[in-house]
Image 1 (cartoon, rainbow, N blue to C red):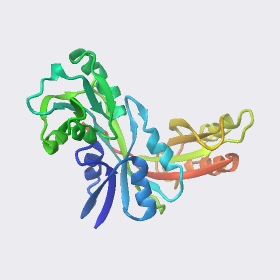
Image 2 (image 1 turned 180 degrees about the horizontal axis):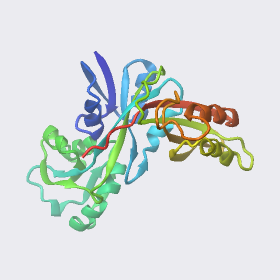
Image 3 (image 1 turned 120 degrees about the horizontal axis):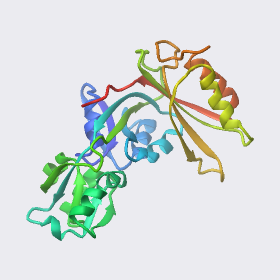
Length: 285
């Protein structure tokens, strides 16, 4: 049996993503944060973890990025979900009487326009997950929740609207993380991710990024996060099109490959960690 940790409780989008990975005989283990999911993998209480890593509206899921910095975990797969919400209350409660809205902070960025139009003056109450927001409404701790439709079924709530999203193309990418190991074989449509720090000197980041450009390696995402160890120091997260093995058409079209570029980056960075190479998710309708 494969134990897969995910941001709970049951009824979150992360649970849906975890089930999409279709691991045989999976046992789904709810935890209270992406960091806790990765800690479960590192500590051995879960075999893998499903965590959100990027949202098309709100950008990187920073709690996941920060949790990936520590060694002992690696990305092996991804999936992508179209994101829309159900708006729910306790049974018999009028949406027009709502004064508090519970949802995850990332979700709030995707529904706040819809809610402002229909429930003006409603106060946002952050929840650790969207399903937890539904749980808060069921417990009387908030009036209305924006959450996956399944959460309404699980917590016995009344649904007032479905398909709610200020941006109807909103999507979230989720990754499957396990203990460090050999990456999946290249498919020709792969993603590689690393995180590094640069020396504190002029042009250090530019020099590292040039290593990708010189080899024709496409950098598809870059994010920076404070290291939280020293002031004015940052972790740079970079996604690349291609596989670390250097095989496949996405590996690079210049004088080298993803692997060659990463070797050069490792030599220039003051700190470096490989986060994984894995097949890119097909875009879901």
